[in-house]
Image 1: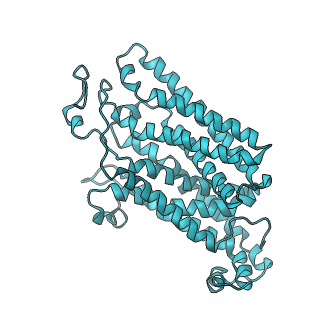
Image 2: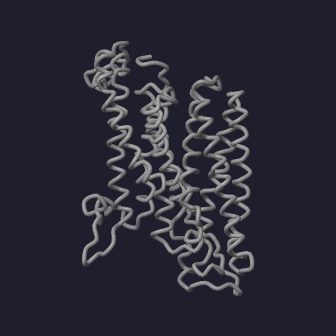
Image 3: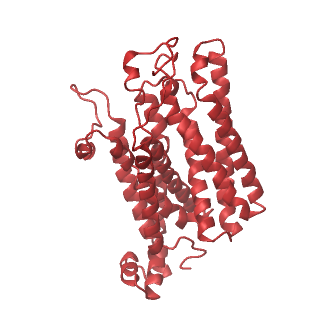
Length: 373
């Protein structure tokens, strides 16, 4: 039985209760790569957080490169996936009014990936030359990736190009940061998403929390717990700001729903997501407090990431999956039935991003304290 008989819902909802399978839940985590690239761009432009740029740009590219594999796994006809690039619906016509947000974002994905890879190759070029000069199995590849840069003077001439790329990269990456929430609101008729006033802001801030949490955890593992406070403190400050922002935005949304639905039967339906929102608030508040403590005791930073992951996993699952269980009428709650392979499809895109990162980490230096070192 899908619903209690006292609840009202549309008949077709009983057969297709979930618009998007949990694979999109994993897909939203991969989008944190876009926020890592934004942080790398801002770090380069402001000359702050500079030691984290290599880690952020390599991690960001690794995750962002796999973004489209999430929706691809959920397509009914994967062999037609390339049509979104060859025949994108970007302008309205008499036969097909409107535009395709998905096609628009797919084009931005190509542009963003080309820009970020170009930035990375130029940024690492001189270090690739120095690494090639040391010899080793990858010396030939490193010499190719040096792009002909042989000294600091030649590298310094690239700075205007790198600054230009850093500025331009922010645009497509920002669109990708808000894309899932924009798609939920504009392309579906899910009751809760349509009435989640702060969804775009919550999603964007939540993605920054994931981006910084991943970066902190990866750095902690790289250094085997012996973290450098100068490296991790700027990331902790960004993470703390993101965590407390999500807490505040989530609390605001709870207050809005209380004001709207306190005397409405809809209040019984949205009760399915409320406890998870409170739990996310607690975990992300803990992550915020741990971030403050870690500024003094950097070794605690691993717990910052663990608390953040717990909070964001609950928060995103609640948004993406639980949010779809409320009937389009707002007066019923459907049962969750997942496909048998949902866990594999959820883990696979993330695993691909991790694999790409591991491969790139053997080629590019993830911590650069000074140019060429």
